[in-house]
Image 1 (cartoon, rainbow, N blue to C red):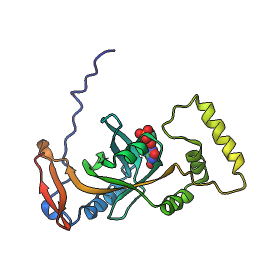
Image 2: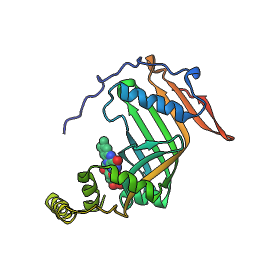
Image 3: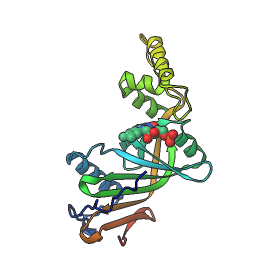
Length: 214
Ligand SMILES: Cc1cc2nc3c(=O)[nH]c(=O)nc-3n(C[C@H](O)[C@H](O)[C@H](O)COP(=O)(O)O)c2cc1C
């Protein structure tokens, strides 16, 4: 394969500024402001975040999931508990989250510890999803090797018939994780690669923020 030439792809950053006086006392409040601004700016998939976990063999493993709630305490997403990430988090709950909102030239990095949300919360969210998504979650043993696409679609159709007239049970192997942040970093792209970065870390009962070199 020929080598790709990517050197000419260069973005200038200058769409925003992050000053110390823009910071909030708790990083969750700044996160909410930035997420609202990403939604208002029409960023595609503004709630999409990369979740990184530590795999069985010690390698970091990353994938995109959707943030489904943030209550100031923690970042909640839903997934298969027996998936690669589900198993990884059950064995080693330390995780990293990453939001990238290119249209705003912003990145938020979060590290923390993940815990399962309550069964009631998982069930309530499951029931709020369209029936097709509920069936999809039931049909998928997430991250398992499967024989074919046809096998998966047949399984979906079988379940569709089975639950045509009754509620779809919330799979026990499916639910939410909440990541409780220990550290949060906000990055705003600036001109000449002199970007603004502020990292919040826990300080007593509150938080402190330090400016980092870009
Ligand atoms: C935009 C986008 C949103 C996604 N949202 C979710 C999600 O909310 N939950 C989920 O389990 N997987 C989601 N996925 C799929 C995951 O990236 C991943 O393929 C899947 O969860 C299996 O990951 P694992 O084998 O590492 O556990 C999403 C993928 C993309 C690209």
